Image (tube, rainbow, N blue to C red; front, side, top):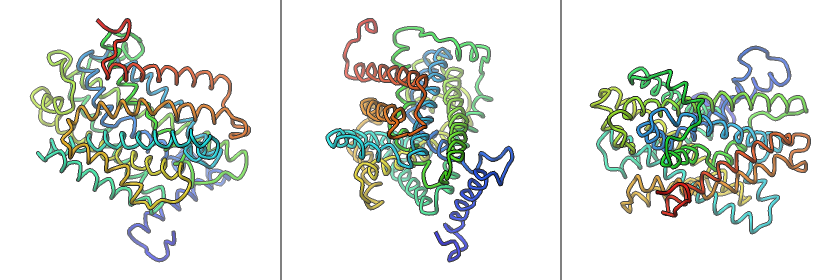
Length: 441
């Protein structure tokens, strides 16, 4: 972008991108040192972290805290650790190969498999956007007493407006999303000061794996399903590109180290926010209102229990979550479509394909909660494909060269993937009323 032509507006945003890229180059070449060297490289994991505190997480975490108190905090921690592992691998794939996961699938898999993965991934991206738009729309509808479709429209317009920042480079959009993440985090920090939290129990249940009863497994499956999602695996591998290019082996190692640090920091923050959601719900609802299971119900219940301020903060965090995760979901949909087809598609077409199904569902009058549940089932069905592809590529010498996963990491990632997929199978079976031996009755 030529920043000499327009010194204001998007051009100024372009300057921010150029400065970040220059600072990253100076760090890689050893011309810039200090404790803040991570900052020029920060961004991709922050963007991806939004997917781990989206409206789907709100719904499952509220249900977990209301019904079981602090007992399922360890599930949130486990899901977040699995997410960290796979996001590290996704970022590594993009840095080493210079391509995103969708592009590599198109290049290296047989055409029938590519078409199957593309179709499944597109449907998953639509399901993701459905959940995100619904979350933002519910928040706006409750706050301003609007019809749900009006809330959807506002969410879509704000989302599209934020996506315009992409034309000015990577940094402006990352800063905008980072600000929304900050709003979510500060909102739940405030909630913890309002809610009567029993901190010794929080610490105990965070590191004590235990399922109180059979129904707790169902909610645990929901927590994992709302945390590890397919679109983030595609997105992260693409976000690491077009920032700063490694010219030597040493520079690539430095890039990978900074990427790993950012993933750990960003997803740790996301994990803490998720745990704060459970803690807030446990403190507010568990003793007296354990049946609270929906976002709207949680909002209406918070006001008389903890005050109007707590309910308002909850809505603010939900709106920030819905808007930011809608942006990220749409970005992932664009990347999936572009990567799998291999030729340029007009930007408005890519965005419309991802957004319109969500409007169709609401316009048809489908119950919002039921739509959220179905979207999670779709994501569960789509997840095995990118997880398996990511595991395969990151252990393949022909793809990664000397940067393949160590055997120990491959084993851990495989076990983690099988665990997540097993949880998702349970979710799908239970959604369709299929009895599971040992979990029914």
